[in-house]
Amino acid sequence: MTQRICVIRNDALGDAILSCPLIANIKAIWPDATLTVIAQPSIGPLLRYHSAIDTVLDAPNVRGLSGFIAAYRLFKHHAFSHIFFAHLDPSYVWAAWLARCPHRVGMGHTLILASLLTQKTTLKHPLFLSHEAQIQCQLLRSFTSQIDYTLKHFDLPQSRDSLAEAYTLPINRPWCVIHPGFGDKNRGWPPEQYAALIPLLNQSHQVILTGTPTESNLTTAIAQQANPLAINVCGKTNLIDLAALIHHADLVIGPDTGPVHLAALFGRKVVCISPIKYIRGFRWGPFNTHHRLIKGTGHCPYRCVPYRAPCQQPHCIEPLTQHRVASAVASL
Image (cartoon, rainbow, N blue to C red; front, side, top):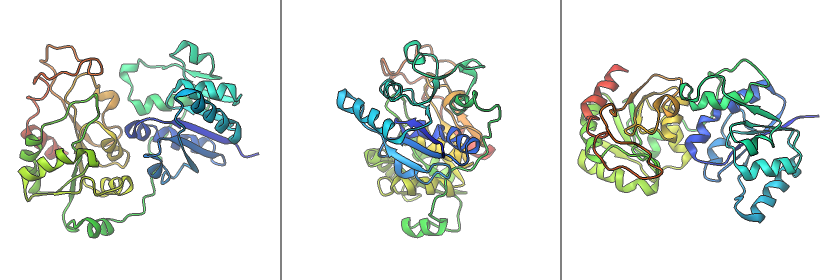
């Protein structure tokens, strides 16, 4: 009987991308299994192009009793042999336990949830010495001692030529994608700094600004100051085209968010601008690719806990000059 394996990754894009090595290695261990990923509806269209994934299901909203029942019925209907909790969502863990899925695999750092798992993983190495992609792959420790971080991931349909035609991009120049948007708990590099960087990049690359529609004010401010050196496609791409632009870029610049993790997964050269010291570069920065991490928190005297109280002090932003980023680009 064909095994049915499920990975729970019902959170943000960056987290889902960091689970791609885990997903690829699951398929390498069980090549004949049917591999399903449960993800946010906004992320599902991209994950469907992952070469290891057979099915992507939209994650039920498990808030409230009706959502919990929906997750339970999903697990009962699909009769998964293994469920890997890349995201240890309590509602999904309880639903999988109630559905009696045979193998429930997750991190064992939460006492109550650990009691509901059949395979509990604790890190061999201290948490602060591991990248998140490596931590995710530790879920396979009960099944293999060999993890391959070079496995293939996405088969995207867009060619460089088709993207150039769709977004009026020069075909004969290297592309540098700048994705300046950042998550709620992060801090970003100011628009004027990106705008000052673009003329330095323009000597060797065509700069392309990307982002979601909600980030259009940020990219517009950058594009207006750097006019006409940058091509602004913010809000014009869907997630698949954004991924393809990153895949065909020669260089990607931005904060430690989903697009930068995508760039690392594709083996692009990456300059990651990561101001705040709360986000540890060795855990959340680019992984397994040529990159430079730009940080300047060595002399910041303040405690950094942004999910409690966002900091507006300049100490982590001021050391990050456009010349420092340009030097990082040159060194790559």
